[in-house]
Length: 102
Figure (cartoon, rainbow, N blue to C red):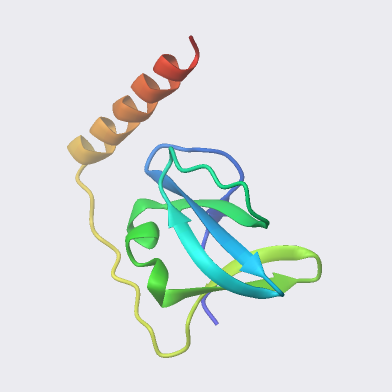
């Protein structure tokens, strides 16, 4: 089992993923930092490349804590980012944070 890194708050290079749950099963997944759900479910921030491949992941409960893992037999493609791409990502995050602070 490969557990995916999740974050409680927005970080540079992350995307919000919301798992809508009905009757104990995932009914749908909403992806995007501006997405808002009024339904019951679980929300995580995950690395952008994980959000792009969320169909390869599944949610599970570890005690009372929801976690995300790679489905059996799936392979997650992890892109290599240059230092320039990382800096652009960080600056875009900072700009978004400043815009939302008004």
